[in-house]
Length: 410
Figure 1 (cartoon, rainbow, N blue to C red):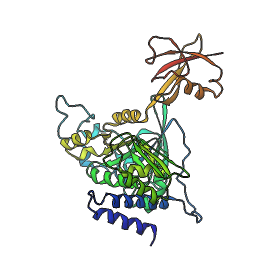
Figure 2 (figure 1 turned 90 degrees about the horizontal axis):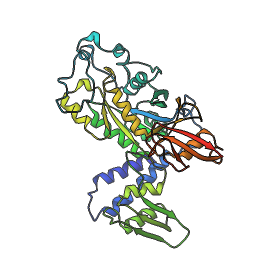
Figure 3 (figure 1 turned 120 degrees about the vertical axis):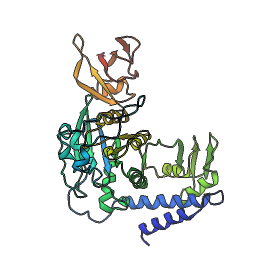
Figure 4 (figure 1 turned 45 degrees about the horizontal axis):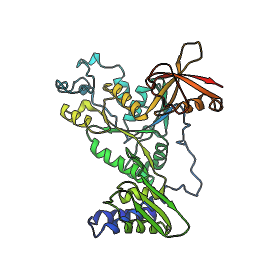
């Protein structure tokens, strides 16, 4: 029996097993076996790889965003439907989520006809960057990873248009493993969904990404785990556990042939989260769910989708709400622009240093030059991170967005 057959059998066994107190240990063992087989499935094949266009793209810019979706998610409405407005504008007091265009076809954006045949990720890439993606009315138009760069608030954000994912991509269908492997290198995932069938697509895509170790909008479990040479399993917890017990933890460890380890739960975690800690190759990244084609659904449905957490509603064909999507993307990337200033001169607002939110003066020094931190004496900072401007600070001072810094060397 191959790995795929074993995975299928375990998934069926989990589905037909009723979850209760008596079966929790059995389910924990099944989940541990399932994670182990999936990890084996993701291991690269020892045989020679087939020749063809690769998916690896050199990382450039200040951040990387992966666009993931099903094939042809972006097929827009017919010409007759493109001239129609949504049924009614947002009611008074509601947040205006997007900008409506005139119902007159001549006032619609000129690019509607050019982008309406693209899958949603390709459409978004073409609208936001200068990169052209092939347009066609059939599925799998995008067969390789197409990069593009968008300039926003002084930062260069690399967008990767990945080929459409089909069900079973985690098992290698439709070159799914290569697509998902590139997605693991991104800082943020944008999941492009069809607003007319977004719930089905969202659950399928989440399942595929979950099965290859990508955890969306989750944090790493606060569990201390360290294998050791002897002494058995030492289990402790600082909180009350409702999902895991010491016996279940030992059973899961024995499944991975680990008989000596130190385990400390600092939060109430599930068996799946504990398995993630043992495996150690999980990727935790923010995900933005983008529902495209909102011009084809009712206003009530648009309002319902827009209120979902981590969700944005857009229409690539009619260019609705794209500015708000960029603002949300900037928040999820958590980037900070820092401007530099030389003594006796004005700040240089044309070339910003892009760092992660929470970066310190020391990070700024390392970005400018690797030896600058060792020659650092003090810095003068203007901006919201200081009590007054300029304020004399040290290496540990935390910078905020659009601060200006002048570094003084010894």
